[in-house]
Every structure is written in structure tokens, then in C-alpha cells.
Picture (cartoon, rainbow, N blue to C red):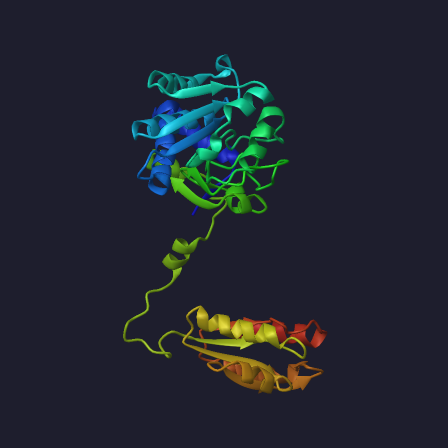
Length: 355
């Protein structure tokens, strides 16, 4: 799965708007609707669900206005707290703010701590809280009202849904800029961002959901592939299909050359990983002095003792190792192997002669 920096995502948005002709307000509508759908699916109740949305003055706040309107349409009680005066809202965000107000949405504009405190009174009755303060463009720590709002989120018991990214996380690095919202769920748009899967920020993301906002296929396909995330779905797609009538001889034989005195665990874990990774057969070659210990811990792995030199596999074992490597589909060398000069020579020779 592609993951993008903040700048790369901004470029995708800009190309969609400028080259394809899809207005930014349409992308904002799709983004807000996607978040609202996730909220309804997760948190709708049989009674009267309530949402409190805290919005900044930029496009992330604009997404928040769409979410508020979408939830209102589904019968939710919604209050939107904007951390700015109304005349500070511009562009697509202003269009969606006006749409929310025209639909009867309850919007409170705050510009000082006391008004913020008053506006958040009664929020403990909320079914869900929505963080729409900052988007992926944040580059410095929050301060003032923004900081107080982030701190307030982190003191609440209700689940928090972050819009695009929890406010306070650097979208390109995962760095926490002072303090950040600790979200239960983060709904991001089109692509995951590096900061959502990189620590320490990733620890505050909660469950990550990526929603489609209508980025055209040509633009998405041409977006940067500098960074890729191997998730569970991607990993499954890389695994070959195993035939139903297969057996241990069908799925390949792995030779592991590993271990030394005091470092048996590395050899054991490597051999077990080979089995868990799908190898039909695994053979572990290790120093003869540790082979009995290793063999007692491995019930499904064959073990072969090698000539020992001070607790490490001796260079004299090269011919035996090359013979063992014949017919094997894969060779793993080195875990817990040691760092001596003889070991270095053995590894180099083994790699060169077994290719």
C-alpha cells in the first residue's frame, strides 16, 4: 500500500483539482461523507446519538462541517465548535460552513479560553467526539486555543474520531509536535500518510481507516511510490497459492546456517520462522557443541552438527555445508553466528559457492 508525505498528498489533491477539474469542495464533501459513514456504522445507537465536533479554521475544519451536516441528516444531535471567529473561515471550508448553518446546524465560534470552556460544557454526554482541528499540513506545535482543545480531547472518556490525522502529529514523519490527540479511530483520505504508521505518532492513531474521496485512477496511479507499507492484505497477496494436494516436499526446503555458543535462540527462532513462513522442510546446520540443545527445542526441524571452532561453525565445515545446500530452495545464514574472521570467510565462501 502506498503511503504519502503531506506534500505528496497535497500534490495529489492539486492535480485532481487543476488537471482533472474536480473542485476541491467536491473532494471535501466526499471526505466528510466518508468520515460520517464510519461514525454512523460504529457509534449509531437506538436512542439519540450525539456528536461534538471541534473544527479548525482550515480545510480540516471544512471536513468537520461536512461531517456535522451528514450526521444531522441522519438524525444525530450535533454541535460544532469552531476555534476561530466566523470571518476567519475561507474558501471551500466557508462554503461548507454556510451549508451547515443553512441546514440548522448548531455552530459555536470561540476565540478565548472562557468561551471554549462554556462551549464544551455538557460534552460528557456525547456519543462520539470528532477532531477536525488540524490536517496534514501542521508543521509546528499547537498553542493557545488549539492546544487547550487537544488537551481537552485527551481528558474525555468518549471515543475520539480524528479527521485525516490526529491533530498534533507531523503527517510526514510521525513526530508528535508538542502534544497530539489520542484517537480511537482515524479516518484518512485516499492514501495513508507516513505519520499515521510511524512511531511515536502511530501510537495515537487508534484504528486506521482509509476512505476513497474520488481521486481519479490516473492521478492515484501516478502518485509517488517512494514509500510502501506492507499490511496484512498486501502480505497475503505476495504469498503463493498452496495446492490442496501438496505435502512437505512440495513447498520447498530451507537450509539455515546459524547459531553459536550462547546464541542458540537466534538459530531456533530462524528455523521456526522458516516453517511459519511456509517452507515444507527446514534443516538447521549449527556447531556440534550446541546441536543437542538446539535439537531438543525443535520438533519439526532437522538439525545437522558442524565442525566446531570455539563454539562457532568452523571453516572446515564448508564442503559439508555446500553439500547440504544442494537441492535446497533457500539458504538463511548468520543469526547468532558470531563475528570472527573465520566466520566471515565461511559466510563469503558459502554465499559465493552456493549461488
